[in-house]
Image (cartoon, rainbow, N blue to C red):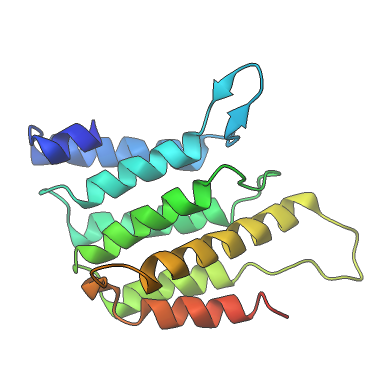
Length: 179
């Protein structure tokens, strides 16, 4: 629906807002985040919802508040306590959504910085403690997402004007994962 409304506009502002509310709520509450499952096929809820965000970011009704809300929703999902490391390009799909969010040039450098700061709060487990697969999954999901976002921004052609200093902030955040 988000793609169709972007390609051939049909929604009213209140309908678009309702779609965004539903998409964000679904993204936060869906617990089955697996990608491909043998015997079932593609579930891919995380990637598909990231696609909704990507096309919604391109929508004529989008506002800075919508974009900031999407970033907050993405950050919450990436640091969420789920025992699953994304392995089917979910990080790439989320990164593509964030690039389109930045491309709109409606967010401030401070809003984008707050997004990266929120993600940077995820830390690897203390080596003296017992292994926690849920904490490790959040750590890896953020690390892999930041990598994907860095390369999407760094090699964007044309460059993402609305990204402000996001490439540098993501690079700085990635440095903590090198230790």
